Image 1 (cartoon, chains in turn blue, orange):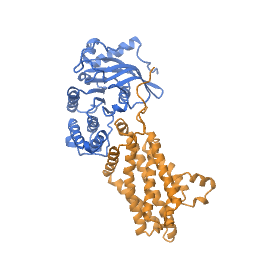
Image 2 (cartoon, chains in turn orange, purple):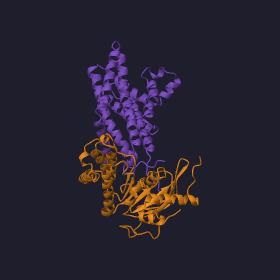
Image 3 (tube, helix red, strand yellow):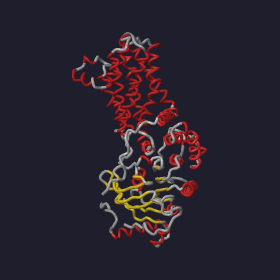
Image 4 (cartoon, helix red, strand yellow):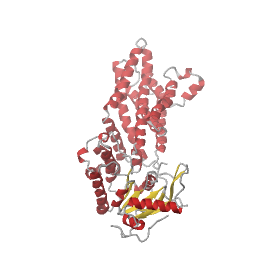
Length: 271
Length: 259
């Protein structure tokens, strides 16, 4: 396995404070399948880390483990200084699943009002809730649709409502599972601008999965995954330089071939 | 290998009244966008009891007995259906997973649902009871308020059962099939069709441990007695206790971590 943890080029906002996420020997079993196998990696605070790999490689399982919703996790997984899933983390992590998890029979604002009430309950927080809801709706560019039922929105709009829910609490760690799937190029660019603002202005750490390799260039660092293992962990530039390739996609393919040649990749299903 | 990724998430955390209230308000707001469901919830019991009144046009005594029993059974069945589907949708849409990843207690969610559907049940039962007593001439010896109390407890039992079985349903198809599986046996054995002591002794013994038997018996106690009988108090205690027990079982089925 290739983990280039030491001597990486320093990315913006990281003068080596404690890591936002640290995994050692992280293994996840689902049913009788080992979905994640002895992962070791570190995510630095205040950075955007792209989690890339083909569908079914374990990206969602890894994100669920970090968010604390995945069962049968072994090894060590520390998130913001706590074991993953600790109750103290719940208000500090925003986890957005791939399928938008919002109430389709409520309006955009009613959805956010409810989740805000769960995060900041009580009458004393009413103003705080109201401003958080308004800000979150603005951040995902749905102000004009605030009073529309989520069921009446397009798929892309609904996933932005789901993202807005995660932005309500100004989380320290945002775990976003394919947040830009099915969005038009303009919206995708706007969302990536938002992600960079969250990292730069609020010091938030973002872990964003994608199977579209062209989004990789927008990340500070990348975790390349394949078949439940980390293939590489580095900056986009360093990956391209190391593999002598022009794009992250080529770098990924190069690394896959290299791993296959050395026979170190996990057991392939033999037909 | 060390397994210190996470301690088990705390189960059955204390309630936060404001989060419970927010959850109940959210459930009611969802229903607010679905006026047809509200109309069906309120009108169907009234229509059925009216139908029943004229089916037994020549036997008002039978209408009294069956009508009172049905006033207890309606809220149980409707709340069972509504809750099992609503909770299933919460599970399949991912909102349950999202809520459990937030600082929401499981008790908040369950109590929120119970409050919201309990409120609907109060309106539903008040309407059905009022129509039965004042328009259809249902002859109640005791206080109609006690009928309403039993109906409310029945509704909570229905909510609790619906919440619990939704954990075992993977789809809406399965969820609605739990209705005949869970409710019909109780309906047959609760004493609605024939007094329970006239059934086969084995069936009578089974009916003694089914909560709907007590729901129906409670209704009949109010029908025949002007004062609070010991049997009535036992009936409402059993129904309330069953509802609470099943709600706790329902809380166990809500898991923060899933495979």
